[in-house]
Length: 113
Length: 115
Image (tube, rainbow over all chains, first blue to last red; front, side):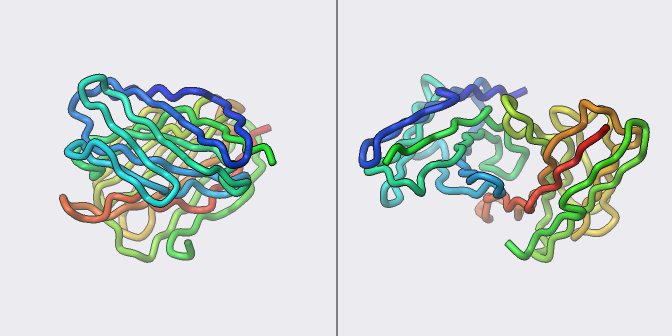
């Protein structure tokens, strides 16, 4: 089955700096890669996703890049703000997400004011 | 989101007892999922369902039973609870079909403690 590895497990950055979280996957048939954000005590929520036919996707301060050859994808957050502090999970799925997701183990991002 | 709810939100039980966690969604989503969240392990899939009366095992199904007689409900039962099943349990749902929305919507979670 699919295996998703996520690094780093914790990340602290100064407010206004950029943060990068990286994930690798093992199943070459995976073609859908979402990122979920979970604030303390809350439920995970989708913040951005990318399909395998796209190399990069942006939404305001967040972007995701995908390298299918190397089987890795990354989340980039620019101009970080205190409200970006949360746990971020990457995930991978076949069938463009219409099947089960395999999640990474999460990255706890702390923004230092 | 008010569209997917879980009950109870908190539960304390004892080893060996049967426990059922409820999940209800109002969107008529085809897919429903159960995850457990433990520190250092992220979100691990227990069981999922593609439609009513169709269920399949996920990554960590041992000790759990599910059923889905109605599209909107997906209960998770721990037949004989063990301490290793102490965790936060999340239910989620999503639409199906290529080109359809892929986002999984999570419920608020149930914090289960097994003594």
